Length: 194
Image (cartoon, rainbow, N blue to C red; front, top):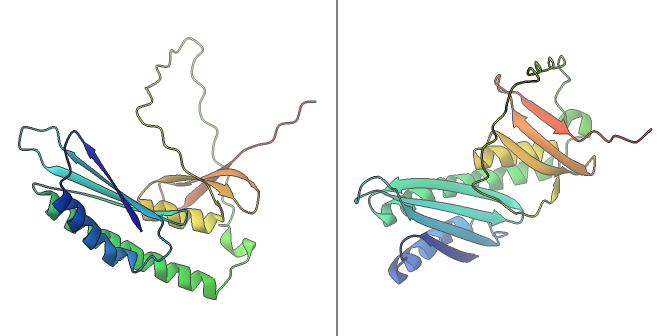
């Protein structure tokens, strides 16, 4: 597994690079399909003695594992991240094995259809909407996956939504976590000119 280091306004020492590579090797043994890991290191802006923030993202053949921790020492933050990733990798491997043992039909994968969502209230025409600004752009390859795989990936990343290419419908889809703990799915509606 290739390890890529990115330091934000700080220099990453060779000693830390070796230390991080050794610690990520134990995670890599659970993920032989892992292509690369990106280690982002930065220092919090609070005071001159701010804590180090270490974030590691591992690309395991299109599935991503990510963890982030803070500490006053880079090595301690990395140790905590490695522990989290180790648990995630074990859980990811177990799910892959379970999924391969039992294939689920499409009807069983899809959640039961619940009552339709009420339409959102429209804003008055004189209301001015001030949009925020884009502060980060992410690019990543989207391998086709099922809704169940997308939900699993979303949970692994710790997000409340996940954009993916639906293998069944052959289009982009967005799965999101609803307030009650259930999941919703947003699909593109194909509009054809009359």
